[in-house]
Image (cartoon, rainbow, N blue to C red; front, side, top):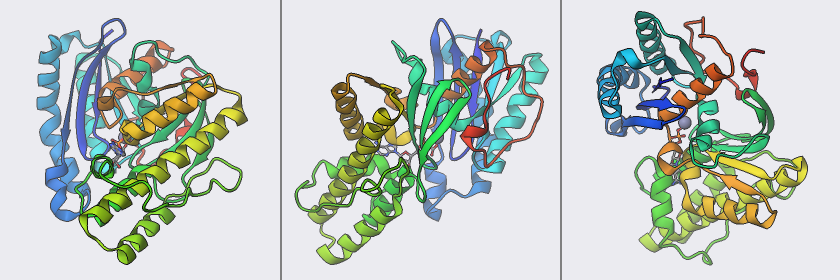
Length: 339
Ligand code: KG4
Ligand code: ZN
């Protein structure tokens, strides 16, 4: 079964083909960063228009890379939310029309379920139940996963998402968007002993997060300590250390609280090497394991959408009847396929 995955929820157009035996056969991501950079943030209307321009040509090139014809595709999975309404509508309308014309099922996928399942695309995938740490530009979630579609929320960010905090602190330091990779690079030059930032919400029980205080802390430090290059690198380092430490503390807590020993971490921030190393060490210490997607599948991609759609179809879910999209769509509202 060849599943075409189409992702257009925000500022990246992504297309991929997944096959259960052959894995990911082709994938392409087009970033709109150049379009939005002049405006200091994503402009929804420009995002929609660019998805319209890019999606069809990208489907063509991805199929060509995979050595497939359109007629060989068995199903189309598309992101139906959460995200920007216009951007989602482009992907949903195109996917559903194409599926209809080919006489194949179209399956709506939740973007965060795509992220959550992405680690299972790797060799030796972890078995459910496990805990998922989902850290992207819009979400920070700790979720207990018992099966596809059965997700229990254990913790979430009460304010900024982790990726959003990286992006805002990066902007403050004069770094380009996306901020995560830029902070990671600058932090490598920073002195870890110069500043110590707080580890928010680790001094009380619970698994929720808060990152907006760290952002303010970075701003105050920048104002008082100066904005020379070394100070900026030291701030990047202190911020990154605080975020990584906070996640490690909460994940240690979640292992204890749930009795589970398998963690998956996904979403853009899970590409961070320092976070990957720290969670790897934590899992080793408790005799458990942590699984990540390969870096290209941590950030938005079509492979995770194709794979999530495949898993739902394989578990007996029928084609999605509604043509609607859901800009706001809590992950925990999902249900198991066929339930
Ligand atoms: O999952 P994603 O591609 O898009 C959303 O669904 O939001 O995540 C994007 C976020 C951005 O905020 C970006 O700064 C962050 O992931 N990110 C990183 C790294 N790479 C991307 N954060 C920290 N370290 C990284 N290496
Ligand atoms: Zn995402």
